[in-house]
Image (cartoon, rainbow, N blue to C red; front, side, top):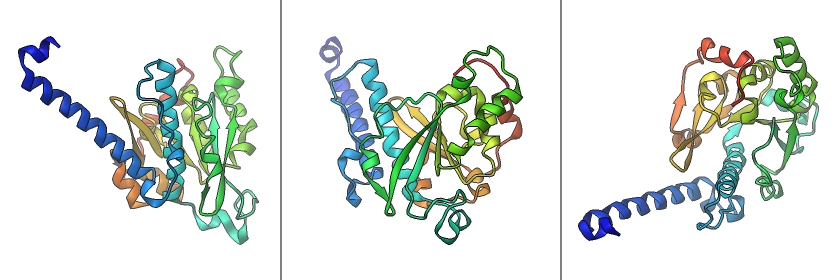
Amino acid sequence: MIEFVKNPIRFITKWRCHVMGLLRSFLTALIFLGIGCGLAVSAAPLPNAFQTEANSEVSREYKLKAAFIYNFTKFITWPDKAFQDGTSSTGRQKDAPIVIGIIGKSPFGDAFKPITEKKVRGREVKILQIKGPSQLLRNRSNPNHEQINNCIKSEIEKIKKCEVLFIAPSEHKYVGRILKNTAEMHLLTISDFPGFADKGGMINFVKSGRKVRFEVNLAVAKKHKLKISSKLLSLAVRVIQDEPDEKAASPADKPGRDY
C-alpha cells in the first residue's frame, strides 16, 4: 500500500505484469492439456487459488505433472517391434492398457485418479507402483553396486510391463543404475530432479518460479527407438540433440546422499 501511495503508476504496472504472466501460464497449460481437442478439464484438476498451505502447493504441482505425463503418451510413438503380431515385447495384447510405472516413493498421491478413467489411442491408462532401491535398501547404510542392481532386477518384471517409467525423487542417487538396467527396454523415462535429462533421462520436469515446464533428451529417445512428436518438442524449454555425457551419469551410480 505504501508503494502504491509513493508511486501508483509503477505499482499498477508491476501487478499488471504479474497478473498477465499468470494468465499466460494458465492458458499455456490449458492448450497443452488438450482442452481444445476435447479433453475434459478434470484431466488437470486445479486447486482453490486461495489455498496457501505447502501440501496444497505440492498437490497442485503433482496433479499438473500427472496430467502432463498422461498427455505425453499422446505424442510418443513406440517402435513397431514392441508390438509384433498384436502383442508387445512383454507378451501383452495390443489392446492392453498403457502402463505408467512409478519407481520409488510416489509423490503423486491420488493425482492420477482422474487420468486412469481416460484412454489413449483406445487403450486404458494404468498406474503401477514399483519399489525403488531407496525403499528396498532402507536398512543398509552403504549398499554396493551389486546390491543396488539386485534390487532393481527384483522389480524388473514389473518395469517390463510399463511404457512409461517415472523415477521418483527418492531414487535420485540410483538413477544411473535404474537407467542402465532398463537400457534395452523401450521405456519413456521421466523425472523431476535437476539434471535428469543430462544423465540420460528422456523427459525432465523443471520449474520456473511456480511454473512447471519440461525439457526433452531427444538423443536418448531416438536411441531407444521412441518417436517424439514435433508438437511436443515445440513446447519443451530445452531439447537435447546430442548423446548425454557418460561422466554426467556416473555420480548417480555411486551411493550418496538422498535427494
